[in-house]
Image (cartoon, rainbow, N blue to C red; front, side):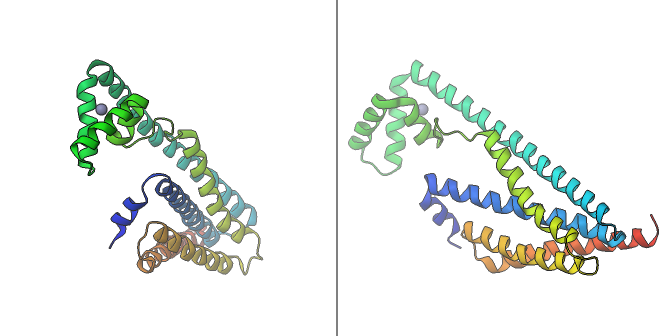
Length: 236
Ligand SMILES: [Zn+2]
């Protein structure tokens, strides 16, 4: 649909904020689905509340730490390559300032400025802060605002934990006869919400995304419940 142009139109801070929000919703979604699958599977095998709590809590911690570690590694790598690109840009600015000025003017012309205005703008930007200008226009990054890997790690840890708490509480709090229905019902309702929000935040039509999301969660719970029941019946 018109998603890409819509995203581009936002650019800068709003786009970045929407991306963060969308990542948080997807992280929570992960926490809901994986923990729901885990506790429903264990519930298929046993009625023991302590076993359910242990499994759910272990799943919550394992999942949130794995998400955090993955995010830390990926953002650190991205940050390293951004820093390397900035260092290279700094060297080029020192060694060949005239070519770099030409390059900046050329990039500004590509964005629709006339030759004279582009040259004038490039000169002013270079005078004020050449590295920042090249980082923004050429590399598309803000040298003062590189993504912090610790922030990214914490954010995904929290998002996953918030999501995982729902099926964990839903399976341990209600009485034994109710716990499965409460968990399945609240998980599917939450997946409607996260599926809808992530589609809206990505400027995609929410209908199909929502159905896929709910179907994925239902499948995960169905499969683990079946396996749990078989193992429980076999006395494993
Ligand atoms: Zn440059």
